[in-house]
Image 1 (cartoon, one colour):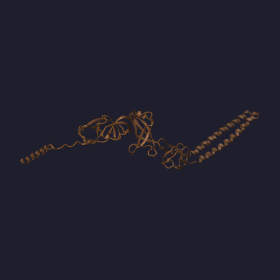
Image 2: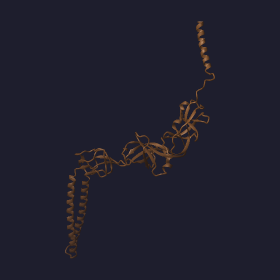
Image 3: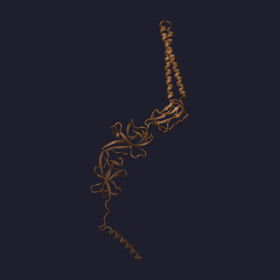
Image 4: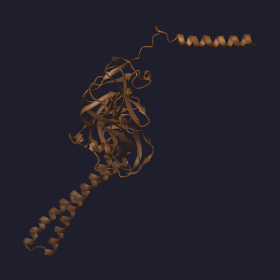
Length: 380
């Protein structure tokens, strides 16, 4: 038993001596960690804000026939581009051709009646002067002439109407654009002003509608009023960034009291047909101009509950925790409203190596990001 106790005490003593020897001179502490730092700078910047919008066609037509009849022919490929004036449907024209011939006959008869009445009224004037006919008979012939003139006008109108109805048997595209599928096919009856034949939408340019909250609109009102058509950038689902450019051509005249938003409309070219009505779109619009904006890499901003802060490196290469007030994001950068001054150095990479404020580090200078005068905002 005494031998076992002696062995345990000997082991404890060895451990204690080993711990004491670790603090001997010659044992070096680990060097400070290397971190990447960037210098804070400022400059004139236009802040942009992102919105979600919906693509819409400037012109949308529900194509319905103006005359009734059976469809003889469908003259378009479904989903194809058509030009204004192209014949899309043909209604059986034979009943309307017959109506035109009847109207032509009525017109010829009316002209003949008018010619006879004018001759009668002319002779009546001479006979009245020689007192060969009564005044009553003269008035009767003048009335017959005027009635024949009215009948001729009615016959001309009837012919014009018949010719219009005959023209309407060719259902033409009222606008240029992309046509949908044929909802009525050959052999089916189409009722005038009732049967929907197909739909047609214009394709170039396109509209993008989006809504801004009241505060953003108020902040950007001065900037928006500088030009009649502020520039915007637009991106679609599956696209990186905002590759399309457009311009705002309409701002609603009042805010929506239910949502607290105001509607904007942007016009964008659609030469390649990539925009389709009903698509969602991402829209960036300028909202503010800042003369001296401080922008830093967003990866440098840390969060402690609802407070944001960064680590700066002083002239002694010691870290300091600095609270900041962050504004909108600008791509990979973020606007700092307060807390930093140009020329200060902040840690942008290697933050996980900093365990406490005041920790020494080895700074390695890197570029914050290539600064440009106009940058993109992704929201507050």
